[in-house]
Image (cartoon, rainbow, N blue to C red; front, side, top):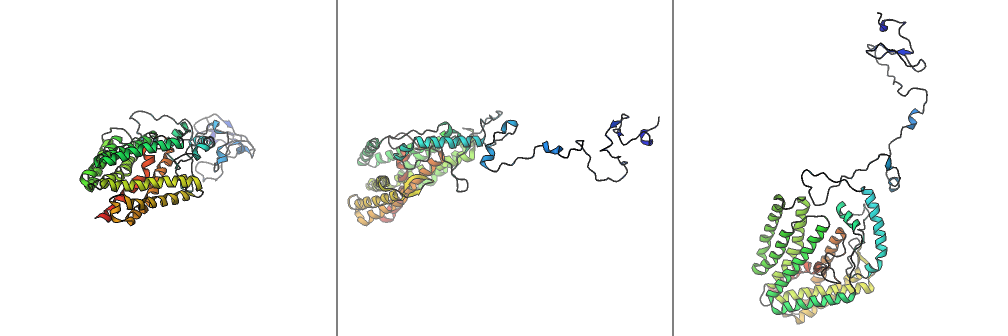
Length: 440
């Protein structure tokens, strides 16, 4: 049998045989060329794979898609097999071993579009309620997103989903309820201060614990898993120890809270992401516990401790009230609209003037501030006028990030305890160091 490779008659331009087979295949004479011998150099020609002479054979093959704008993503062409992956991790929880992550219900782009539509609708429905809100730190309903190039207070995916599920924020009471609640709280506080330092420090401890619990609970609703028990023990303990042993309580209690917070997650009391949850646990302890503990330091001097603390609180509360009414009456210049949309420069100035005036009154009437004269009271009012707005804006910053109007709901017309005592927390260290400078 003659090998077809060695026979010129057996090989024709229209026929060829695949390697290892004797069956000839017709490849066509018009478009086929004689294949070179395998020992010869390559010709550099590209074989025709689609056949035929149609120059537009590749035109039917779709090219790559580039999506650079919002309109590109709005096209209804995702049903052809294109899949958008959302690889974002949960906020605070670690999934149990062996359990598979549930697939996302919708893509991130879809959630963002839905969130914006919810925000627009809810914001128009509650416009009147927002304007009448006693807490001018209220952020837009639906968690208003900022432009990505301006900074960003954009929450985690879990926070955004929870806000989408609960687009409406529980409203506030009218001004009458606000005054009634303020009157009751003020009467209880004055009674505790009148009885003595022990009742005053117990009241302060209860308020600090209530504020800390409200923040931990707000973080829990946002999807975080903080070591709440450790944080609350630290917040309550540091106030009482500051009253009993002075500033030596701060390094001791802080060390214990840090160590036991880490152990909380090492021992997996709660299986959660340690980095973010340890940070949040310590943040609340430092913000509410450590700052609140300066009230215990102010109450230490006997019998002047109640007067020292009462002077600081009176200036802070008076400035809050003055800023509220001045801002509602003549506030037109936004102060920090990205943090607290309804706070105004006019309200800030009105609150500062009120604090200084009340400080001057305290410097005349309230011992031990009055022992040093009116200038001491004016200095107290000035210090409070500077620090109180920082405390108020600090809470608004956290509320803005969490997408909530109020941290708590225990006080009708005010929100929660922290919503009323946020400014005082920042005035306590300032008042303590001012008193330390004046009276020692």
